[in-house]
Amino acid sequence: MGKMTVTEAAEHFKVSKEAIHNRIRRGTLDCVIEQGIKYVVVGGTSTPVAPQEKTAPSHDKYYEYIEQENATLKAKISELEGETKQLRVQREQMLIEEKEKIEQIYKERDTQLKSVLQVVASKFLSHQSMDEVIEEVVSAEVSEPDVTVVDDDVIDVVEVTEEFVSLKQFMKLKMYSKKKRDKIKKRFEKYAFDDERISLVKGKIYLRPNHFDYSDLIR
Image (cartoon, rainbow, N blue to C red; front, side, top):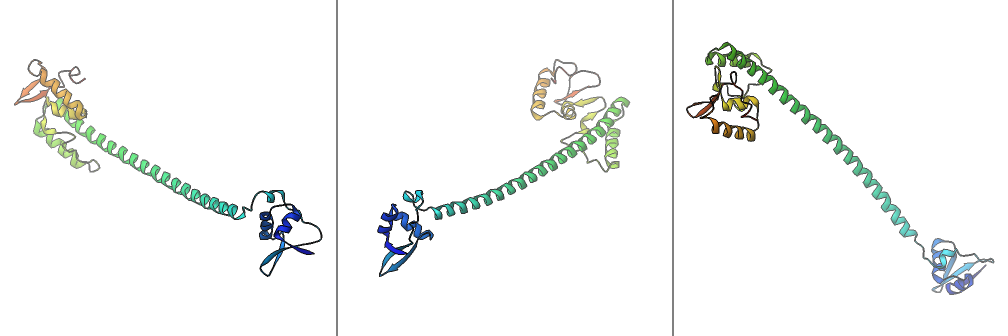
């Protein structure tokens, strides 16, 4: 067993001094320090140095750092995937709840409209007075607690008078959009004085849907 300086060891093993320092740091070469000088302790047989040590320094710390970063990123990705899945489930549940609410609203409106239209239609056929029609509608709404009372935005029963119905009420019963109602109103106003199917009372347009067809004006 002998010892030699780093320079001597590099020449002995035919590698760079950096390669010798790397081997000392990794513990593959023993060393001692005497009077401030570092000596490499070698045995009788020369220990070969790995080829890559001749050209490249050790990257152990760098590789360890990269592995730690990869582990951190994997944990973060897993966390984000869990949050994304949870948000997707919550969104789907909200959509289902909104769909059920909309279906319930339309179901209730259909029930309300059917009830009112049946009363109005039956009174047109029997030619009962307007007071009786209103009383019948009010009684029907009170006797059916499961049905919400229809507001003025849905139907204005007061404007129905025996066989005549106002244009406004007629369009509400048809449930046209506001844009379409405006177009139809302008069309009826245009032909109000020339079309015998249209009646004007105090500036308001009234129709007789049981006697005439207005499909050409409400297209």
